[in-house]
Length: 275
Image (cartoon, rainbow, N blue to C red):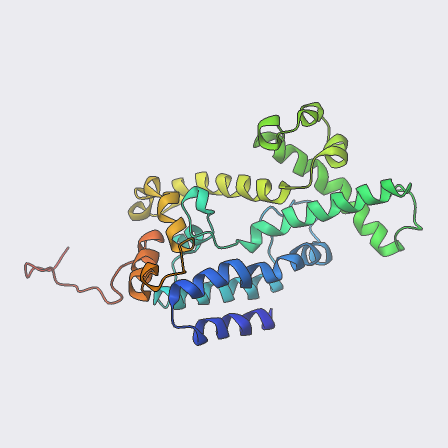
């Protein structure tokens, strides 16, 4: 977490173009710690009565704080409100800034690693729940608990959000999956984390629409992929095609529903003070 914070700080201070900083942070810095999320969940998940669709740990707090600080640096606003943080974590397909939400990414990364481990064990002729030669005692015990408690809940979540169907996977064999065991044994791992992540963010967005401040709630239907992609996906070959840092900051504030002025005047242009 300290190394991630140090590299993010260097990225923010050594480059002058804000669009370049944001693009590199999204495509390079954030993915550099994603592989640690599954291990963090495995070693620190103690409340087995609750499936951590939104994971929380000390490691996660540190890297999330680093992301928030970087976002504050890009927007020029010291304190980022909760709704802006939420919008920055939405995928571009939902009209967000497309930054990675580590709290949501942890469980999909963990369940994919879990499924791969069990399939490898079965391929080698070893059943991971009964053969202790394949795992040491402590690892075996924890893995069995995670398997028995996590997998059925993930399977139910996939069913409720229509993740398990032919249209999402393009495979006719998936239509035969009706149980958790079949899901773990046969569901394709490719794209699984992306589909779980997107389904969770859609569920959170539907909840956020009902609880967001009124000033933000009425602008949420205006979220569009067309205003998300230009923030990152733009031809950088020619200098004239680049977005200036000032324009990028304005676009970022509009996307995250932040005030365009850092110090708004309390007096209207007509000379009166708003109520």
